[in-house]
Length: 293
Image 1 (tube, rainbow, N blue to C red):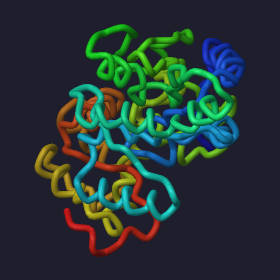
Image 2: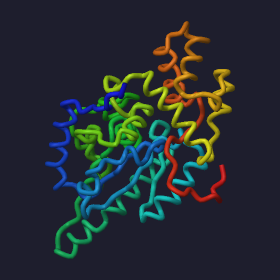
Image 3: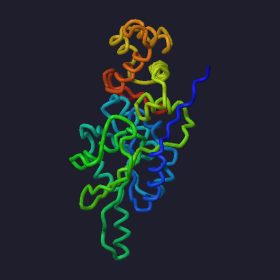
Image 4: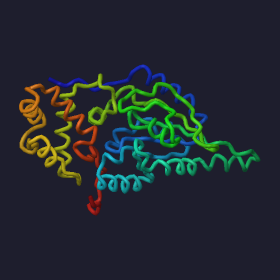
């Protein structure tokens, strides 16, 4: 039986994207916020079109949820692509001050042009764009040092666009999470579900947990993180000897009275809350072997 595609595009996202596009003419800088565990899967396919000639600040949030080796690998890879990644933990404030400075620098050209025309400088206008639940609102709250926008560890909390004055010379537009109307890359869609970056109504937990385990088996030989030993220590089961489906069935049999749905949700929650450690689910192509954990 072929599993159905993962699709999730609630009405508030469609409305938010239209409002966002309408506001882009007023924006100088785009803060491109992604989940550091899956920085490629959380890149919107229309992002380059939205950025255009504007300044751009690439923010990889949840740096606390990936290993130092993964961070170094992604930093090297993005710099090879001509981008400077800024790593943050918006919940705790790590790396957040540097984002405001990077945004000001990215928007300097605006006031330089105004000055050349004999016009007074104005505040830089930046928009925060990213998939649902990648930490955009938490980032804004940390930048402001106070809670001004709703933030929670689930997709779809922010529903409307809102301008926020960060400083006398910087305004931020907090936008709801945006994502493609259709998820054509189902491998990426599975990762969005694993990381809780998509609504729970879009997927079956058992399918996602099984895909998560299978992905870990694929990653282990090429990444610098060790997944198998941690799983064996925590659950007493050896992933290397069986498929993800069989492993999940064994976990359900041993700890959840054969309830695979409960087992799947426990496994995913343990990953999402960091109980399994700091694990990246994507590694950059050809990660340099010199990167040290």
